[in-house]
Length: 195
Image (cartoon, rainbow, N blue to C red; front, side, top):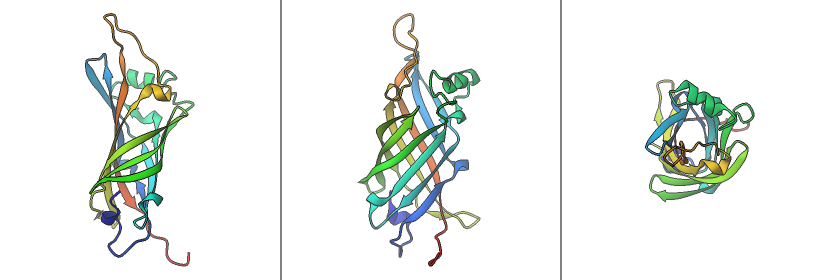
Protein backbone atom coordinates (compact mmCIF):
# COMPACT_ATOMS: atom_id res chain seq x y z
CA UNK A 1 0.00 0.00 0.00
CA UNK A 2 1.10 3.57 -0.55
CA UNK A 3 2.57 4.14 2.89
CA UNK A 4 3.91 7.56 1.90
CA UNK A 5 0.28 8.68 1.67
CA UNK A 6 -0.99 7.02 4.82
CA UNK A 7 1.91 7.60 7.18
CA UNK A 8 2.51 11.09 8.49
CA UNK A 9 5.34 12.79 6.56
CA UNK A 10 7.69 12.76 9.58
CA UNK A 11 6.90 9.22 10.66
CA UNK A 12 8.65 6.06 9.58
CA UNK A 13 7.00 3.98 12.32
CA UNK A 14 4.38 1.34 11.50
CA UNK A 15 0.76 2.52 11.61
CA UNK A 16 -2.19 0.32 12.52
CA UNK A 17 -5.62 0.48 10.92
CA UNK A 18 -8.99 -1.23 11.43
CA UNK A 19 -11.50 -1.95 8.67
CA UNK A 20 -14.68 0.00 9.39
CA UNK A 21 -17.48 -2.60 9.00
CA UNK A 22 -20.15 0.08 8.54
CA UNK A 23 -18.43 1.43 5.42
CA UNK A 24 -16.91 -1.72 3.91
CA UNK A 25 -18.15 -4.77 2.00
CA UNK A 26 -16.96 -7.66 -0.16
CA UNK A 27 -18.80 -7.91 -3.49
CA UNK A 28 -18.77 -10.88 -5.87
CA UNK A 29 -20.02 -11.75 -9.34
CA UNK A 30 -20.54 -15.17 -10.96
CA UNK A 31 -22.13 -16.33 -14.23
CA UNK A 32 -25.70 -17.62 -14.01
CA UNK A 33 -27.14 -19.99 -16.63
CA UNK A 34 -24.16 -19.00 -18.81
CA UNK A 35 -26.03 -15.86 -19.94
CA UNK A 36 -25.77 -13.24 -17.18
CA UNK A 37 -23.97 -12.38 -13.96
CA UNK A 38 -25.41 -12.72 -10.47
CA UNK A 39 -23.96 -10.20 -8.04
CA UNK A 40 -23.96 -10.26 -4.29
CA UNK A 41 -22.03 -9.22 -1.24
CA UNK A 42 -20.89 -10.18 2.21
CA UNK A 43 -21.98 -7.16 4.21
CA UNK A 44 -20.15 -8.02 7.45
CA UNK A 45 -16.44 -7.43 6.93
CA UNK A 46 -13.80 -6.94 9.61
CA UNK A 47 -10.03 -6.85 9.70
CA UNK A 48 -6.88 -4.97 10.48
CA UNK A 49 -3.89 -3.64 8.60
CA UNK A 50 -0.41 -2.74 9.81
CA UNK A 51 1.62 -0.58 7.44
CA UNK A 52 5.38 -0.36 7.83
CA UNK A 53 6.73 2.55 5.74
CA UNK A 54 10.32 1.58 6.50
CA UNK A 55 9.88 -1.95 5.11
CA UNK A 56 6.70 -2.62 3.15
CA UNK A 57 7.27 -6.39 3.34
CA UNK A 58 6.71 -6.27 7.11
CA UNK A 59 3.18 -4.93 6.64
CA UNK A 60 0.29 -7.20 7.60
CA UNK A 61 -3.29 -7.58 6.38
CA UNK A 62 -5.97 -9.78 7.96
CA UNK A 63 -9.57 -9.77 6.72
CA UNK A 64 -12.60 -11.81 7.80
CA UNK A 65 -16.01 -12.07 6.11
CA UNK A 66 -19.09 -13.32 7.95
CA UNK A 67 -20.51 -15.97 5.59
CA UNK A 68 -24.00 -15.63 7.10
CA UNK A 69 -24.09 -12.01 5.84
CA UNK A 70 -24.28 -13.09 2.19
CA UNK A 71 -26.89 -11.12 0.25
CA UNK A 72 -27.85 -11.55 -3.41
CA UNK A 73 -31.26 -9.86 -3.01
CA UNK A 74 -33.07 -13.21 -3.36
CA UNK A 75 -33.82 -14.87 0.02
CA UNK A 76 -34.21 -18.45 -1.28
CA UNK A 77 -30.93 -18.24 -3.20
CA UNK A 78 -29.20 -16.77 -0.15
CA UNK A 79 -30.41 -19.67 2.01
CA UNK A 80 -29.09 -22.14 -0.57
CA UNK A 81 -25.72 -20.34 -0.58
CA UNK A 82 -25.57 -20.62 3.22
CA UNK A 83 -26.26 -24.38 3.05
CA UNK A 84 -23.75 -27.23 2.83
CA UNK A 85 -24.05 -27.10 -0.98
CA UNK A 86 -22.04 -23.87 -0.94
CA UNK A 87 -20.56 -21.98 2.04
CA UNK A 88 -21.80 -24.34 4.77
CA UNK A 89 -22.23 -21.45 7.20
CA UNK A 90 -23.02 -23.75 10.16
CA UNK A 91 -19.53 -25.28 9.99
CA UNK A 92 -17.60 -22.46 8.31
CA UNK A 93 -18.84 -19.12 9.68
CA UNK A 94 -16.12 -17.02 8.08
CA UNK A 95 -13.97 -16.52 4.99
CA UNK A 96 -10.50 -15.20 5.83
CA UNK A 97 -7.55 -13.66 4.03
CA UNK A 98 -4.09 -13.39 5.58
CA UNK A 99 -1.30 -11.54 3.75
CA UNK A 100 1.92 -13.42 2.97
CA UNK A 101 3.52 -11.11 0.37
CA UNK A 102 3.09 -7.52 -0.82
CA UNK A 103 4.60 -5.87 -3.88
CA UNK A 104 4.11 -2.50 -5.56
CA UNK A 105 2.70 -2.65 -9.10
CA UNK A 106 2.42 1.10 -9.74
CA UNK A 107 2.45 4.47 -7.94
CA UNK A 108 -0.76 3.69 -6.06
CA UNK A 109 -1.27 0.04 -6.95
CA UNK A 110 -0.17 -3.07 -5.10
CA UNK A 111 -0.39 -6.83 -5.30
CA UNK A 112 -1.36 -8.53 -2.06
CA UNK A 113 -0.77 -12.27 -2.08
CA UNK A 114 -1.99 -14.36 0.79
CA UNK A 115 -3.95 -17.31 2.06
CA UNK A 116 -7.66 -17.14 1.23
CA UNK A 117 -9.62 -19.69 3.27
CA UNK A 118 -13.14 -20.76 2.25
CA UNK A 119 -14.91 -23.82 3.74
CA UNK A 120 -11.66 -24.68 5.54
CA UNK A 121 -9.69 -24.83 2.27
CA UNK A 122 -6.76 -22.39 1.95
CA UNK A 123 -5.30 -21.30 -1.38
CA UNK A 124 -2.85 -18.58 -2.36
CA UNK A 125 -4.72 -15.73 -4.05
CA UNK A 126 -3.41 -12.37 -5.31
CA UNK A 127 -5.54 -9.25 -4.89
CA UNK A 128 -4.84 -6.21 -7.03
CA UNK A 129 -5.19 -3.13 -4.84
CA UNK A 130 -5.97 0.45 -5.81
CA UNK A 131 -5.09 3.02 -3.16
CA UNK A 132 -5.01 3.75 -0.42
CA UNK A 133 -6.65 7.10 -0.97
CA UNK A 134 -5.05 10.14 0.67
CA UNK A 135 -5.98 10.04 4.34
CA UNK A 136 -8.58 12.45 5.73
CA UNK A 137 -9.88 13.43 9.16
CA UNK A 138 -13.53 12.63 9.75
CA UNK A 139 -15.78 14.97 11.83
CA UNK A 140 -14.88 13.01 15.00
CA UNK A 141 -11.10 13.37 14.57
CA UNK A 142 -10.40 9.89 13.18
CA UNK A 143 -7.93 9.44 10.33
CA UNK A 144 -9.45 7.44 7.46
CA UNK A 145 -8.37 6.06 4.10
CA UNK A 146 -9.90 3.73 1.52
CA UNK A 147 -8.76 0.83 -0.68
CA UNK A 148 -10.31 -1.32 -3.39
CA UNK A 149 -8.98 -4.87 -3.88
CA UNK A 150 -9.98 -7.20 -6.73
CA UNK A 151 -9.27 -10.85 -7.53
CA UNK A 152 -10.66 -13.79 -9.50
CA UNK A 153 -10.90 -17.31 -8.14
CA UNK A 154 -12.21 -20.68 -9.25
CA UNK A 155 -14.84 -21.64 -6.69
CA UNK A 156 -14.15 -25.36 -7.19
CA UNK A 157 -10.64 -24.85 -5.80
CA UNK A 158 -12.32 -24.20 -2.45
CA UNK A 159 -14.78 -27.09 -2.49
CA UNK A 160 -17.72 -25.07 -3.85
CA UNK A 161 -18.58 -27.70 -6.44
CA UNK A 162 -22.40 -27.76 -6.46
CA UNK A 163 -23.93 -27.30 -9.90
CA UNK A 164 -26.79 -28.43 -12.11
CA UNK A 165 -26.79 -29.20 -15.82
CA UNK A 166 -28.98 -27.29 -18.24
CA UNK A 167 -31.21 -29.18 -20.64
CA UNK A 168 -29.53 -27.68 -23.70
CA UNK A 169 -25.99 -28.02 -22.30
CA UNK A 170 -24.04 -25.87 -19.93
CA UNK A 171 -24.44 -25.36 -16.20
CA UNK A 172 -26.41 -23.19 -13.77
CA UNK A 173 -23.43 -21.63 -11.96
CA UNK A 174 -20.10 -20.60 -13.50
CA UNK A 175 -16.78 -21.58 -11.91
CA UNK A 176 -14.99 -18.23 -12.04
CA UNK A 177 -15.89 -15.73 -9.33
CA UNK A 178 -14.86 -12.08 -9.42
CA UNK A 179 -14.29 -10.51 -6.00
CA UNK A 180 -14.11 -6.83 -5.12
CA UNK A 181 -13.42 -5.69 -1.57
CA UNK A 182 -14.09 -2.04 -0.82
CA UNK A 183 -12.69 -1.17 2.58
CA UNK A 184 -12.60 2.02 4.60
CA UNK A 185 -9.71 2.03 7.06
CA UNK A 186 -9.61 3.87 10.39
CA UNK A 187 -6.22 4.50 11.94
CA UNK A 188 -5.73 3.24 15.48
CA UNK A 189 -4.46 5.79 17.98
CA UNK A 190 -0.74 5.29 18.60
CA UNK A 191 0.23 3.81 21.95
CA UNK A 192 1.96 6.47 24.08
CA UNK A 193 5.69 5.93 24.65
CA UNK A 194 6.47 3.94 27.78
CA UNK A 195 3.20 1.96 27.75
